Image 1 (cartoon, rainbow, N blue to C red):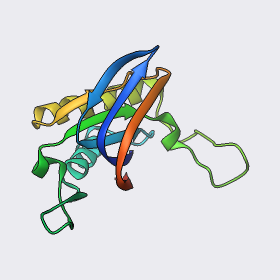
Image 2 (cartoon, rainbow, N blue to C red; image 1 turned 90 degrees about the vertical axis):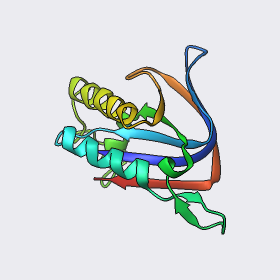
Image 3 (cartoon, rainbow, N blue to C red; image 1 turned 30 degrees about the vertical axis):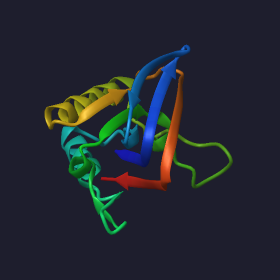
Length: 145
């Protein structure tokens, strides 16, 4: 499971011109699910996303987490994160989870985040989405578990 996180001042996702998910300060998470992932993998990634210290403290050091600042989380499924780009000029998606498995883990991740008290907005699984954000920094990290 891969999570590309971006520290944002705000972010939103639209489908067919309609805003379906929107957050203020927090993290935009692009979530990629691979064949070998399961609920345990999702739990590990959620722990990392929620507690990764990427927000500035009073000394302007990255010492605060999403939980610390009571920030919001926008979760967007991102199939292409599972791509193997090592060879050739076209990505291979052989390690990507099936759509059914990926959707189940995406939904599980979102439900667990909400159960943990995180304010969560989402995209729409497998939809053609337009994502807009104001990357704060910019600060972007690829988290793999």
